[in-house]
Structure formats: structure tokens, C-alpha cells
Image (cartoon, rainbow, N blue to C red):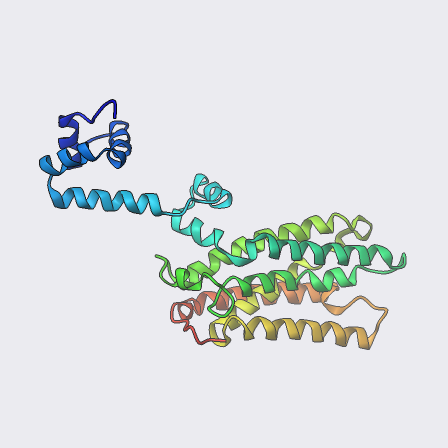
Length: 276
């Protein structure tokens, strides 16, 4: 070593009174200098010094924030909230890639049909994507970070809402971009939006009682059955959920489910690991 930390600085360091940037310099130097560590042990309170080294070890061992997590923190999101959002499984590239693939295939299918065809496949699949994304973002059966989420300093309902907003922002944004690839269908290409909100909010309400696997599976099954029944009744007509009346019903269901979700919010805090 060509230099050593001044004795007075070491005393201030031991008292926890050394301010940056001298504090940072002393931290870095003490890691490599046994002589200064020996002086520090003589002039400082051993308990305070040990506590300082424990904090330094914890800081060095802490995982580095990723790009997405760092961006959230710079936008003002609390560090623990950013960590839980970044750990959301459905915000990883594999899930988002699968969503993009489904949307691309449905858009291609719409353009491959006849001139009079409607983007039925796209309208049918788009509402299921946010429902599935929310289901995969919460619960012990599907979320590999569930144990970390349980001990996070926030209520279960708030965690669910944070991840739901993140999933909806990502999936609805991608679906909106896919809608731009269907300009020939006008506003009819947006008929998936209200059903998507209705399915997602209904799935969330039922999750409080049925769990994060059964609830979205049941809601998705009812949606598929409804579309199949409408097709069997009149294959050439616009499916009922995408008519004006169907859109009104979807909006009402979304509003009703949103209100019910507020009343059952406490049940997510008592959510047990054996729920399915």
C-alpha cells in the first residue's frame, strides 16, 4: 500500500460519522489493507465495527439490479416493488415471445381469410392472453418467486394488483400493436379489449375463492365454450361477444367484477400455499 487511512478518519469511520466520498474510499481501502483494519480495531467500538462490516458484506453480496429493475427504480418505484415486478415470470422474454407468436399467427390468419372474413381468431385469442398472464404471475403453483413474494413488505392484494397492472400493460400493449396490423377491419378489430378486461377481472375475483389455477381455467373455458356455441348457432354471423350488445355486457361484467374484487381483497392476504 502506498497510503493509509488517516487515524482521525478511522475514528470517524468507527463512530459512523465519516461522510462520502471519504467513507467510500475508506471502505475500499479497508477491504485490502490489514494494517488499517488493525488500527480500526484498536480505535473503534468492536460492536459498531462488526455491524459496519456486516452492512458492507450485505451490500457486496446483494444481487445487481437488472436493466428492467433499474429502470423502474429510476422512475421512482420502490426497490422491493421493482424487484418483485422484475421477477414476474410472465414479463420474461419467453412468455412475451409466446404472446407475440400467438398474435402474429392470428393476424396472419385474419389476412389469409376471404375479403368478407372477420378477425375472429384474433378476437378470440387476444382476451385470453392477459387472463393467462395474470394467472401465471401469482400463486405458489405457477410463480417460482412466490416464497419471495410472501415475505415481501406488502399485502397479497397489492402484490397481485401490481403484477396485474404490469401484465396488462405488456399484453394489452402488444395486442394493441397487433390490432394496427388489421386496419381493414376498423374499430371492429378492437372488440377484444372489453372482453379481455372482463375475463381478467372475473378471473381475479374467482381467484380469491378458487385459487390461481382453477379460477382462470374456468373463466377461459367458459369463454371458449361461449364462442363455440355462437359459431355452432350461426357460423357466418359475428360472435355475440363482439356485437354491440356483447360489448355492453363485457363492460358491465368488468365493472361488476372490479367492484367485487375490492370487497374480497382481504382474502388474498389469507391465500394459502395449497390453493389450486
